[in-house]
Length: 336
Ligand SMILES: Nc1ncnc2c1ncn2[C@@H]1O[C@H](COP(=O)(O)OP(=O)(O)OP(=O)(O)O)[C@@H](O)[C@H]1O
Ligand SMILES: [Mg+2]
Image (cartoon, rainbow, N blue to C red; front, top):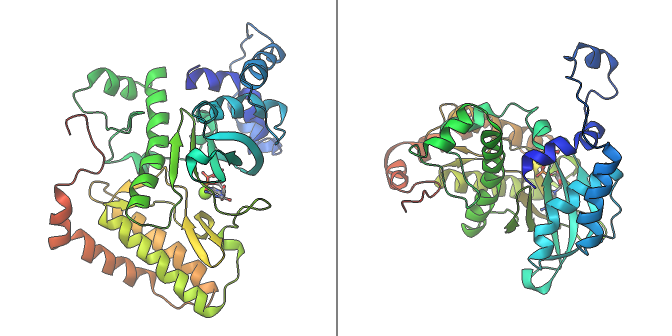
């Protein structure tokens, strides 16, 4: 089933996460929906999906998903089950507006006992967030992780015209940026989860936490002053490592840093931007560093975000460092 079909089928599941659901005024202002009569009742559709995704596929989970969550979840994770990577879904770590993340039981093949599966929301909701800024100056990535070339006219036209295919390509690209960034940064020694596998709608990666609980995000953690200083330095080291690879996180803050046993892990990369081609790169870097500094200031670390951003920008984006990076394309095309 294509991602596009998913979106049509899961309207009710989406409604569960609709930020306007409990806000009557906002709902009234919203444009009325075009009413259409589906060929099948929603119950028929759900029963059909639950049937094929759950029972026939033999993929049953300890975690009991909600009625509208089940089909989407199992369809999204089925690929990992078929690859013999995942044997069970143990719990939902977090159900958010853009993605839900689940703790999964894995096989020895993965080299891990537990993994985190990030399942993206159907595309429509993810797009509530304005992602145009992030797309500037960055190529579209296909499902093999390679960039679409400008001479792939059919694909470029589909994106330009926002056809079904175009929207699906955008969806894939968004997901592939997260996956390939995790791969690249993990290989470079950054504090990020190891990317294990990617499906049409989900990423399987290293899990931070234990059987009982997932690592908390840093914004909920109070640090001793020496530890705060050390983790601040680690965070900046990761920002530098990204710049060395021509990357800027784009949504970095204590909300996207996990804390576990004195160590941190940076997560949530779909909006990563190209520091060399995005016209807003410096402003985005400044914002990332400002947010990081805000959290660490609350933990007693005194640092000037603007000074740090200037220093990093000058160091990585001018002169010899930039020349060294110039030849290395960020993401491969088919030519390479
Ligand atoms: N590898 C992981 N190990 C443990 N927990 C994780 C992992 N990845 C994500 N999480 C948990 O899932 C949450 C959401 O993940 P992430 O930040 O990648 O998605 P998101 O796009 O911000 O989703 P939303 O906008 O819906 O919050 C994180 O805040 C964290 O609590
Ligand atoms: Mg996040």
